[in-house]
Image (cartoon, rainbow, N blue to C red; front, side, top):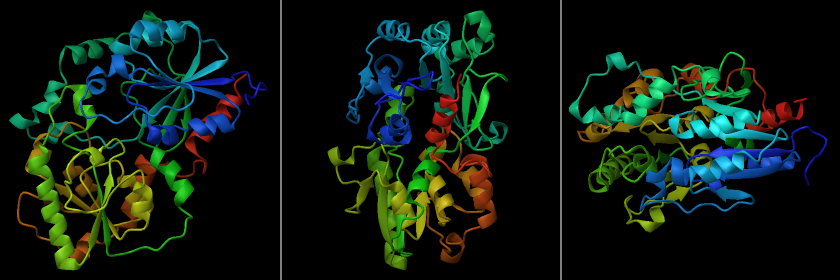
Length: 395
């Protein structure tokens, strides 16, 4: 039932990547419904991320209540023009040339909106040695990237764009590239999506098996973001997965560990060959798997958040191709430097000091938590509940 006591009665999400069951949970749709708001999800994937939309390897769309898929920009702009000031937009689309007309339309309607400002480690690129294979990063400097660079130099008022009313700051070192924000935008101290999951699971009881390891999968050879961005995948499945399995075999045989795979939320391993040598591949339970494990294996996934929150040892792995295909922060070297760890390159002989690998520097973990997960002293509520409380107070 819609709560008519608030000036704003409807929440509309703008999304630019496939909306799935995981998104339904992490974007807080149910939270807003429980607070009495009417909620709609507007999915612009077909015309914003057409590469992903047309990809042959893609997850099925999750059809939640009031989910709308827009095939064309014209169709989306027409719908936005019908919104009024009883609506609040949760914008999960970037401010870019491809979305400029949408931003201008809901600015014209004077609709209040929020943007997500993630806190992610930023690598000093001046210290990165150029390699021909690192061209993935330079491929992003295409015509679209050049146009966006020019766009960001133009004041918002000249383009009739209203800056965001609220910035959901998800960690003290949050960043705002690709977001339409100014000093007038109100900072709402929230936290990472992973912390929301942590809040619901931290007090759950369950045995911890110190001899169990969890690999945080990135779905590297198949990730739809590569189709979206036009970048080439850094590795092929035939060269990537055997190297992982060789490392898992080494750990299991030498130390009697058992390795589980925390599958990427957008993966579809059930439609693919068994790439993990018969090991359990589990999607949608990364937090639980980390909480009940003894240690975590990963490249640079943001799901390191769960290892930090549960104070689990991390083992950082890479390959030559992974390093050469680096296109997003952070790098494995950065991760290792922050946590005082060694990077294990799976292309070479393993030198594994178990005692060092299973050590947790609590001070560094707490620093990472403050910088990139949740600022110390902020509210211990679901992040979307924090925003819902602010929206209720809009006059």
